[in-house]
Length: 260
Length: 176
Image (cartoon, each protein chain N blue to C red):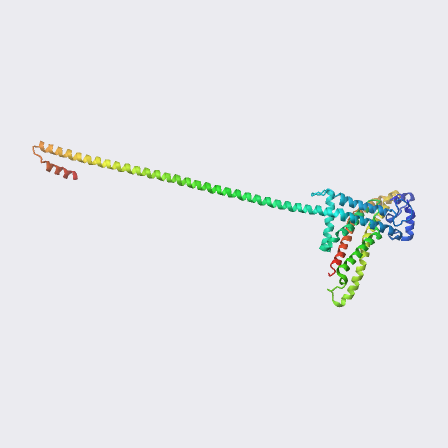
């Protein structure tokens, strides 16, 4: 980012690890309104394009023996489909397109965010919270539509001794309502922390331009650290998308089969 | 860039965390919803049915190919069986022919041997008969010669040989 380029001019290290998360308009300097075209818009549009490129253009040949892109598309399909089927059960399969949508959006956003100078949409709690709340509300509605008041049986652990049940019910209710919070903060927190750490190490990298004595040690070390954290972030980018999707499946399973 | 002013504003409002800047939430949420809706329609209308069809088609192809392979394998086994059977039949046939030929030859041989034996026996019998005849003839001749000689000898000695007694004497001598 341009901010880092200014560092040397000031004659000292400048840390702006959070600047990469700033939401700003693309075409004007004005305030960020609801429909303003911002970097969020751009990177979400790129996410959509990447998904279309992978899942639509990549499979346009419909080959029986798949090429590379089609293999990846089929792999993604099979991966999520099997996850939904295994975790949520056979009747969870009809929600597969929704979970696939969430998974593809998160995983592609995460990976796009790893490009240098990219904006990571999934690092924002506003984004992940909306998805987590959508999952939470959808799952709760599905639960009550399918089982009526019986869905409340989810909180009444019949396997536990009777005196313990009210206490457990209280804990279960609290944990149920905490779900969207942990669900969303886990993803946004992971993405934000990783990117911020990379930026902090990146700020140390130009040390050699300030002091050769210290920089000769610090600069290679920080570049090494960036590389290592970046590798970790590649892993995290996938794992967090996977965790988000599989937790959605788990919540869905609770809604479809509330009796443990 | 506008970063500096926005960053300053953020530093004031959200303690340096742009994630906590509430003024950008509506923007993010709006674009997120648009994005998710677009992705959902692209996936559910185009991508997922297509991939599902491709996977199903592949599964079908694989199943068909396996079935065809099974079929061909069964055919190969059948052909091998038929071949083995033909081979066994041919072998049995050959054995039969050999045995038959052997029996024929043996029968012919036996017949020839029997015929030869019979001929030999006939010839032997004939020979024996001839020998007997010859022997008989020889004896007769010897008797005649002896009788004549005896009569001559008796006559020469001045006696008169009684033909009957000479014959009896010769016969008596011949028996010895």
